[in-house]
Amino acid sequence: ATRWQMILVVFASVPLLVFAPEVLSLFGSGFSDAAWALRILVLGQVVNMAFGPGGTLLVYTGSPQVATMGYAVSVVIAALACGVGANFYGLAGAALGSAAGVICAGMLQWYLARRYTGVGASIWSSFRQW
Image (cartoon, rainbow, N blue to C red; front, side):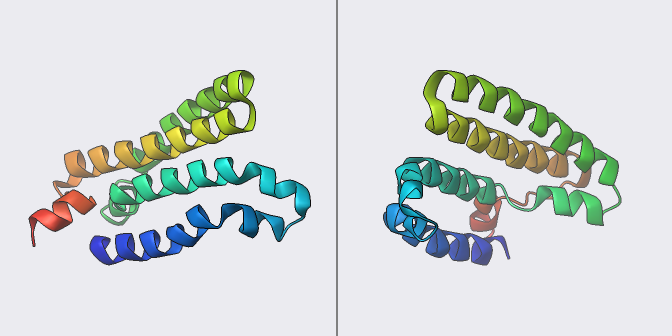
């Protein structure tokens, strides 16, 4: 399932990466200036997806408190990274901070799922089983 999800995410992401200014201009002419921020956020989500549905796996196997703890840590990291990034690099820095938080969430949920359930839910584990 992770392979198919990754394939769908990549196919959905490519148009957003390539046509970011055009997509954002649908919301108004001033929004196309944020094309790099959109690209950074999309790439962050693609990397997050590569780590698989660790949080969902934890919830469905009876460890919702572990998943919640992992997300709480990720929110703190994202908030700090967004604040620092926005302070130094503006919108692109905030996007980098948000992407870093999303990637940390994916990595942490993957690690916790692997530790508590023994299941590797990442795309790499998926290809290893092929």
